[in-house]
Length: 207
Image 1 (cartoon, rainbow, N blue to C red):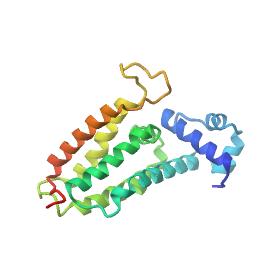
Image 2: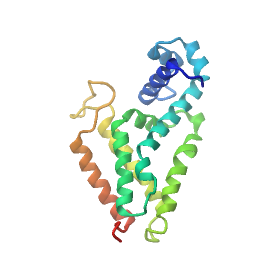
Image 3: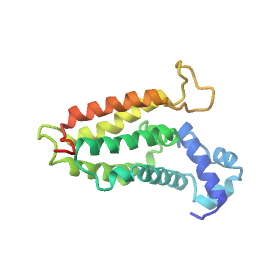
Image 4: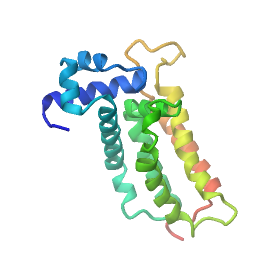
């Protein structure tokens, strides 16, 4: 892809539209109009809608990775180590529901011709956590499914509480997303910590 301000506007517009409407529901014309350019410019700078979608997902994953890098680097297989990692993951997606929307649409079969993205971006990272934890958890814990449970629960909570509805369950009036309140987030964080403690039975950092 070429660089430049036009490209950044196109990627930003595409991120919003793919998150709200999905890849399949977003046309090149919609992206061009939202970015304030013509469709030919979108094609020239991105290589087409599919390549633009891949760039959007790459940037979203890079942002995710940067947000949790502090907890992921030197990750220790302890209760506190897992909690730090999960807390940063929750905080990132609560603050960026547009990135959450991208992954939620993929769960419905959106952008079916880019099915390699999970293998490229998600599985290697989760696989690394699994291997780091394998010797620390009891043998009767299905660690692979347990680790996958974490994003399932986080995405499930945030998709109900953050996407498209107001506090009373009615459609949001201030755009497609509603921020989760600090009180809701803290309650959910406490729930996640308890869930992880009971699922993984990990030692504390003090042994």
